[in-house]
Length: 196
Image 1 (tube, rainbow, N blue to C red):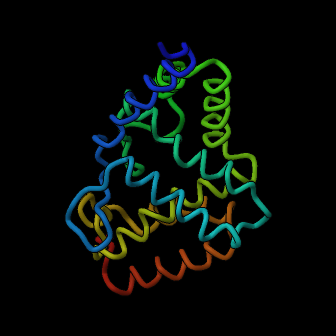
Image 2: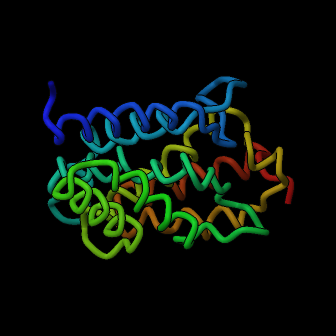
């Protein structure tokens, strides 16, 4: 007989397997296959480990990794909202809040509380850890779209100005990475990756 704590943890682990089925609009680097949320979160976590030295301020890397691994779990219930969606705002929605409470609520109360706090911190984007985590979240799809000759920017006719505005969040986490992003966006214009 397993403990109630372990039973709850196993239930959560089984539930989050569903994140592997949430497809994103972006495609894998140099690929025509859509990325899923699990791949996205894994990639961001490794990016944070590798790029942490470029953060504007020192960060607790483990905390950043935790944020990145859980930030999209709410999409199991709420679905993925395309960052350039003009119908549905990409900011924290009530739908995501309900999803966070349900999914993280499967865990023992202390872990549920920790995960909800981490998710809220990421969404608020106020701490340096959250700022750096969010910069990873904006950098990865840029690398994908660049490698795919504009990818979703071309497919959905997203303008340079719209992409630039959405990517500016990178600067809050890392001036160094923001400089890289600006250069990549300028190269994208030169290569004709934007329709407008």
